[in-house]
Each structure stands twice: as C-alpha cells, then as structure tokens.
Length: 155
Image 1 (spheres, rainbow, N blue to C red):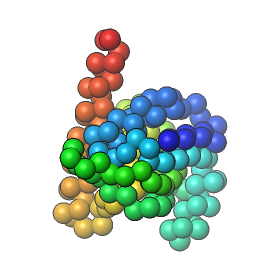
Image 2: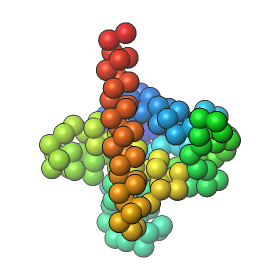
Image 3: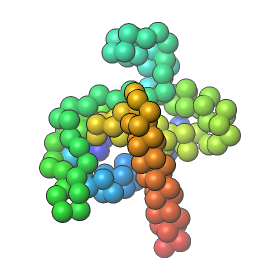
Image 4: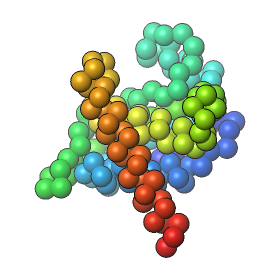
C-alpha cells in the first residue's frame, strides 16, 4: 500500500509519483504489499523535521524514515510485506533545484522520491563506494521508469 499526501501549496502530479514508486518496488523485487507513505510538505514543516531528526537548520529536499529495514529482493525471493517507512519531500525546495538543474518540477520530484526510496531500502551515500552504487541504481531506475512511461503513453 502506497499513500501519498500533498500537504504543500504546490500542485504535484501524485499519480506519476505513485506509478514511479510502484515501478521501482517491482524492479527492486519488493512485495506489492509493502507499506509506504510519501508526504509532501512546505518549507516550514521540512525545516522542523530537519532540525528534529537531523539536527540541521533550515529545510532540505527529502528525508527518509525507514521502519522495518526492508531490503531489495531478487527475482527468486521477493522482499516480504512490511513497513518500508516514510518519505518526506519539500516541493518548494525541489522547484528551486529543478530550476537550477534545468528540468521540470516533476523530474526533480521523481529524482527525490527515488532517492528517498533507496534510503528506505538501506542504500546510503556516506562513503564514495556506496554513493557510486546508490546513484548508479537511482539513474537506472529513473531511466527504466521513463521508458515504461513512454510505452504506457503509446498504448
């Protein structure tokens, strides 16, 4: 079960984000019965969470709160159902980052949501090897989703 709640003032394509997460969970062999919450919040709410959980001032783009420490499965052994956790994204910060990067808010939201999901599944980027592995998988997932979306639109 995937629940997306937009508490921000920005209009975000939550249907695409839902398809994105469903696609990624399938690619990562995570049970479709795993539970995930995605909350889109404004800068003030994100700043509060950032201080409370990371002890860092100001808003950030995405935070992840893992619950059952689920990890990706394999084609032979799908990850069992459980609580993946929560992903919190700030669309206002995403909008600024999207402008800087030269792409759409939706593209930035897809990137941040993917990034947050990988954190829930145990990926990190604290050291260079982990960063290379996580960011390569992030790019691969986003590329595969873009291809799936093109096929979906043609159908």
